[in-house]
Length: 79
Image 1 (cartoon, rainbow, N blue to C red):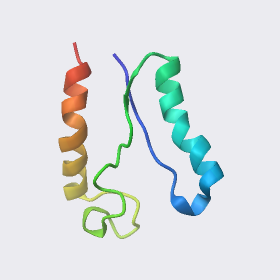
Image 2 (image 1 turned 90 degrees about the horizontal axis):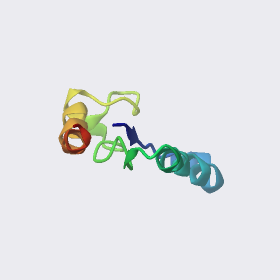
Image 3 (image 1 turned 180 degrees about the vertical axis):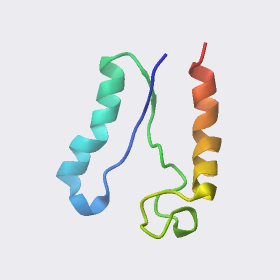
Image 4 (image 1 turned 30 degrees about the vertical axis):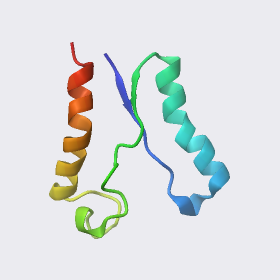
């Protein structure tokens, strides 16, 4: 089984770019009949308490949030 974890483009890159970028993950999952998780950083992106100083990479607390959200999905697609 394959799970595609989607990402969302940063808003500063513009709506046109975001539309293409955001759809790419769902399109790939559909094309290859894979499971799809819409946003890997759900609950973490944009929260300064869950990201390192660069504002991009999650802290260990942020990773715990990611795991708590995507973990059950991963478990559900495993045989």
